[in-house]
Image (cartoon, rainbow, N blue to C red):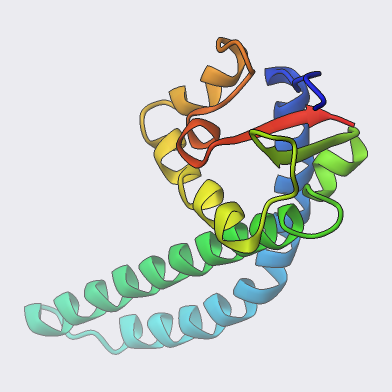
Length: 158
């Protein structure tokens, strides 16, 4: 089994590369929708009567719902991208491929979709408290982030 573990900084650069790629995809998919809804909200704001609290609360609730839906779509795209790439023959996202890294289970085998999905869902936990779960990749013996430990995975150099 390859025990040449990928350290924090290599993984960090891969995250930046993937962030650019996923950000572009998210922007192309989400921005037109946000623009359409934004125009609707702007029109509603113009028609807002002074002192009509119910109408104002309704508009605020609509904005909050839109932001929640947009955030959910961002997470879904992010998780699906990484899950599909890590469970593919490439065993890693574009950022990891560029840097010569791959994601494996603890025995060095390719991840199936379920294991890759769990790993990527757990990235939410890794990022919750000041990204300490990610920082752990620079501090642990096998260079595992918290989501790697939870999912029993490794990121190694090819």
